[in-house]
Image (cartoon, rainbow, N blue to C red; front, top):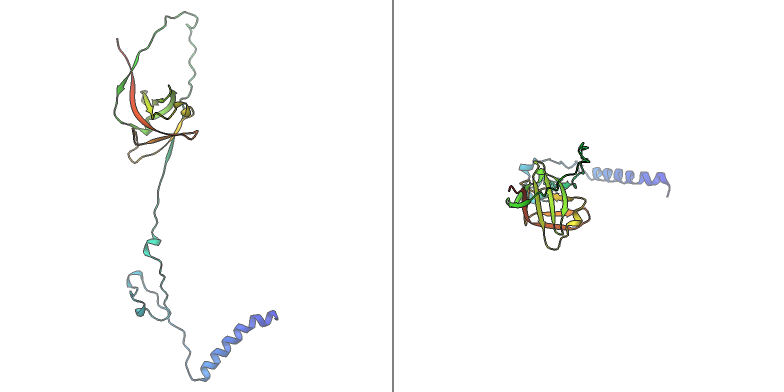
Length: 189
């Protein structure tokens, strides 16, 4: 088919349809389309004016739900270089520092954790920003050596990490819950 004929064929059909309607004496009028505000849309389809089209999408499809999720990374404790000791050559008498655990509750503020270090087969030492030391006991099946490079933690609504509620995710992929937290304090003899 000729490309010109393909373009003009629909136009010729429209002209013949319009001229055929006028020959029969009928007036051709364009359908009127009315736009209704959301509150005044007719409920039944029979009340709709001719030419008005209503979408059948439920109103809940236009709602937007935004979720926010924050993951916090706790890094391993940084090795701070020790200052040079002028008395390094003088022999020192070994001093044993005695440390004991003290109960402290079931939750810690996430923002207060400055660093982490594995301690023993199933516990971690948490270094707090206020210079406290806290031991965090993991579940039985969780080795602490998986947390040598820190851990990830999902932020909770209250901003706390709690025993038997929150899960620590190591960078190697293991996920463990805390079973107990204790504060480490110096024993005064």
